[in-house]
Image (cartoon, rainbow, N blue to C red; front, side, top):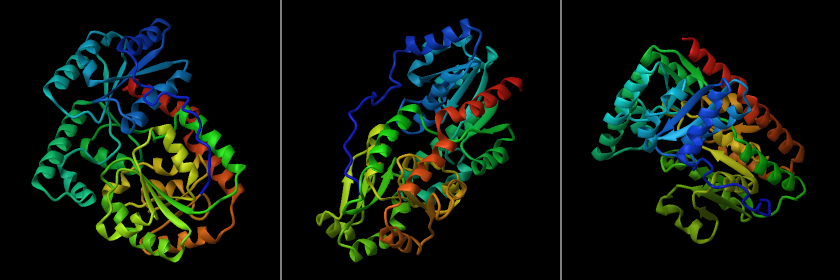
Length: 391
């Protein structure tokens, strides 16, 4: 691990929490100067899906001479309805159907606004519920009722939209089959705050030596990955048993079965709560390995590769299941490792025995920035919006 000094919090934890007047004012000003505008609508601002699919997109368009973007949530609908004249494209991000949003969308269509549905996961349409039940280990009828209802409500909003936007080619193909509508791919990527704070941690890390304990990090953004993580816990347990100077750090949402209680009591497994997106970079910079285990099925192949590039920009190597996006992001043995069940332990041993790889850390970071830095996505975002306007 690396004993880094935490950068003083320079950025607001929730930078999207701005008054409605300021957010709509951004679009009004853009219109005044002849720009086209896009509004990103999400049920309620948060640090997960919304940050990547709404906030980051709007921030990227601050570099554009042709487009401007701003973010809104369902609590803004009544005010937003009165300001639709300032919007060319409306992107609904994982918004589930209800009467209020149904009326709002129909009104927006009357105003000739292009409606898009942005979905980053296989959580639309009851036809995909078997994959969701398998992936999330849903057992109770109440859970099934919730997810069946949510996926159907998501499906209804997607049907009302003109086009679809998603994060990778695998999910795009499923969407095209289910909706027969244009579908565009804008992958998840970084924002400037992540990049800036990560740069500080990376440069500090380059000037430090690796210290004990050797630390594996698992960073869970939601409580839906228990089955994924349980898949590799036997190999992690074996690794911790072999080497007394190793530990596992779990950040975010995760509960382990009672059989691992002894390792927790011995302080070989530590838990940290869910972090702000800038503090997360600090925790990822300190560990020696970032692990991304996923049950390799249709549901997992729809996931984005964000758990790879978040760690890569602080120079931390990732070991991941070879799902669709990770196979395309990671060159095995170069900027990370692709591991099936039975291969994790050997990879941990290899990385544990290796001497510190400062140059490899730099290559990992540089490759991730080439692919996922904010300014490098501007053309894709602009081109997508331009295509939508031409439909």
